[in-house]
Amino acid sequence: MNSPRPMRTTITVTQRKGGVGKTTIAICIAAELTRRGHDVALVDSDPQRSAAHWAELGNLEFPVYEMALEDVSVSSWAQEVRSIQAGMVVIDTAPNARGMGASIAVADLILVPCTASGLDLDATAQTLAIIEAARERRRDRVQVILVPNRLDGRTLEGRQLVEELSEFGEIVAPPIASRLAFVRSFTYGQSIARFVPGDAADRDIQALADEVEKVVGLAQ
Image 1 (tube, rainbow, N blue to C red):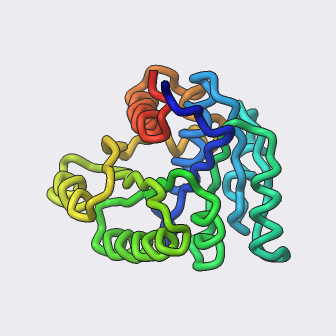
Image 2: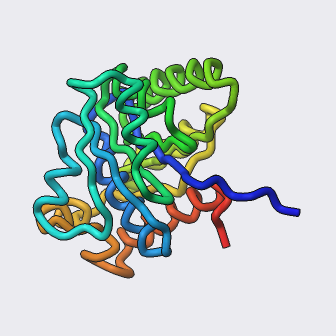
């Protein structure tokens, strides 16, 4: 007999360094999971409120909750996140220790975007060290997917990124290419799923969603 599925899955999108496409990944994966029939909500815990601003510009397919950690305790914030009525909650985190620690603590799955730069690879190593410490405190091995993002296959660095990420010993998602559609979708306040359905950018996000569903046990 199969074990029952958990009532809720929380997916944290985090990275020690900013500028890696964290909000774009959070918005796009939330939209794609919604398109697949999952009941999804997104938590914007970054004081820069990029995800919330994206939602204000247009009409996203899922609710976005602004829940920055600036004025509340970590325990109160975690309780608020757990109270959200949704089958899947995606958290867009701030790139600081407090925000990362809180969002990692409530996560069932962690997505770590990384671009093809030495700084990003160093930051990814730091992020994974934070996650490993959280695993020890939690006494479980929360799953991690490394997401090669903004990949330019024309450069040596771009071609080597997936290989370098695989050396960390975590799951590596299919790469997401650097595409103008991701920039334009923000301008119109839309997800890739709605802005360019079926486009190459959309297919990149679908491949990431396939990996997410497989890891959390929701693949058909």
